[in-house]
Length: 339
Length: 104
Image (cartoon, rainbow over all chains, first blue to last red; front, side, top):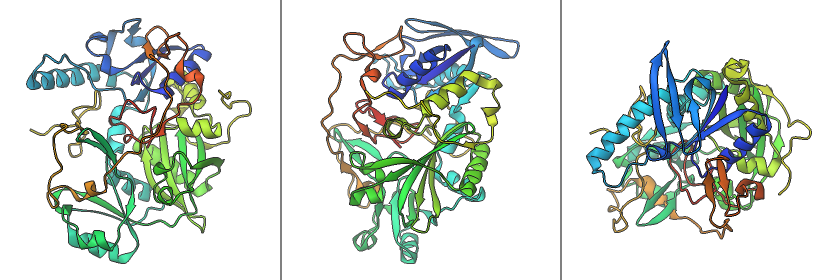
């Protein structure tokens, strides 16, 4: 039995996972789909209701039937020769996606997480609706391309603007970011451009601090995030150099609701973001089905890599394939050695 | 033509509405659209703050060991935590390969 890691070759967390799986004596194979087709070959045949055959990388031949667990970590798009014209490239990509991608997504393995479920969970409005139904507290949210709707909504309470998808673009050769930001009078006076696409606005959640909760099968580990700048107070992603972190416990009611959310979304891993108010209320912001954990693991010793590795080693036979989350603190002696 | 999740290498078309991350980089000489045409949400875009990040020299992916190593074959990850925990993308989407972590 083997574990397949699908990850960008530039992925420190995937590097750590290779080492963790090696320590456990597991057979691990790592692929970046960006290697296809130049450095990745597929040869698969349908036998007995499943795809059999091999994936071949520069150093390995991977038996499809041996794969019992897959860790999916945002591997790159396929990279086709520059000599292809745009129609040829699009054709090659779609054939590769539904061919190679189709063989991979059909593997009867434990997926952490299956890319189809990651794709479904990526819709923020869907997440918020499911989270609310599962019992998590969610702030009032507006999806609109109507300036009038924005003004009505903003008149009700302090309001922030948030992106649905990527918070950064590359424009004119420069990378730019748009983090969560509060609406002010100047914004409301000039909402030109709202009509061009859907925009997300949410009423502000008063915060004492924030938290990122990691769910790995039935393990739950939560890190408090404490901002120390004005911008990081609004969006902690602007404060990586100044934020502080410590492991905390979430209320039992929040844990139960998260358990229901994970089950409904059919995810085996998630990084969930919360605001904790001055009154102690936990407000759900979002779930990231492929959410990063490495920097918090480095800061707190949270054993996320170990938990994931243990789950992957157990594979599809594990109860954790669709288990009940269990709250826990890091086990003694699992803190990663200092560099 | 609707492009559905076209750049994602495995995830199929969602039963929901089309979702394509697509390419986000413009041509270098492309200019922002005029106010009123440009989506309002992009008004808030600001250049990323540059952070000096010491990086290993000549790091490459070692196919035998299945991780990144430096020019002397030492695993980069064993030299300590990545020094650039920055936000470059949303989960599951493309990101800036020059960043060590794509946090979201």
